[in-house]
Image 1 (tube, rainbow, N blue to C red):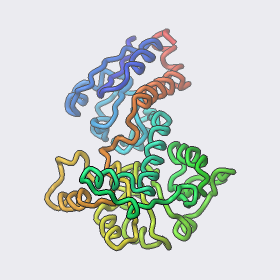
Image 2: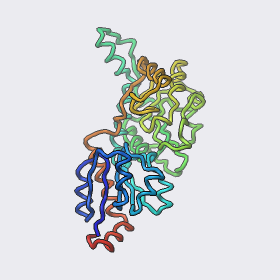
Image 3: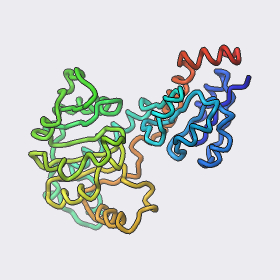
Image 4: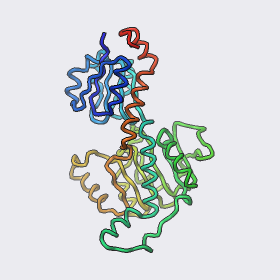
Amino acid sequence: MSRKILIAEKCHAVLVEQLATAGYECDYQPSMTNEEVQNIIQEYVGLIVRSRIKIDKDLIDKAVSLEFLGRVGSGMELINVEYAQQKDILCFNSPEGNRESVAEHVVGNIISLLKNIHISDRELRQNKWLRKDRRGKELGNQIVGIIGFGNTGSALAQKLSGFGCKILAYDKYKSEFGNKLVVESVLEDLYQKADIVSIHLPLTEETHFMVDEAFFNQFQKSIYFVNTSRGPIVKTEDLMKTMKKGKILGAAIDVFEKEPLEDLNEEEQRWWTAMKQSESLILTPHTAGLTEDSYFKLANILAKKIINHPKLSEQSHNKSGLL
């Protein structure tokens, strides 16, 4: 019996290569719409997506042969994981694939914020030679707070450790992860001590708008802030209000409440205009995890997880004799 996988979004060729070698029949359709996926999903034992296809209850109900779902990436907010698991459907992702890329992006942004690189670049292009006005700070003398100590948070701590800065990390769902590089902390520690805060959390009901004006007001110092996780974790209006008050010295934002930006309504356009006008912001279009290296690793890691899962290996052996 054929064991077919639908790959409904663009990904590195290594994913198809590895799954095909393992005995799966891969149907690579990178431009499919949600409706098109729903019309044919009953034929497949696996469905792999990235960021366009929403896997909700309706789609899962139509996927009568589905054994697993795969996300080429980290966040699973577009997949109804709980309902899939109730249907005995395995769910895979590959957050290990872009953690180094995101961590490097954060370090680069932090250095630019501390040394005013982004501001000096803009000024010099306007023939403004303002050396003394752009005196910076050394990263080694800062206290960095990391919120969320999973794949990316821990990779960031590893990279920051070479600069000599003190690193405080908080993770609500982890404990005993402190080591010589990082101090396991509670949020109150970050509120009292942090100079820089970087967010590394999934988007859930619990984390939605977790970072708001009340959150920023808890900090004893004015801070630098970085978000490369998910946009709706941060209430943008409150971020901009807090920046105006001087509570946030500068921020690097790679993810936004609504993406892409052309879909913003009139009210959302107001905060976007304010962001564009702020020289204290570094803005990037959700590219922190986007490198040639991560493009390969995200697909390669996901393929290996699917191929090596005991349940799928057993089923493939029993049904097709190919594994």
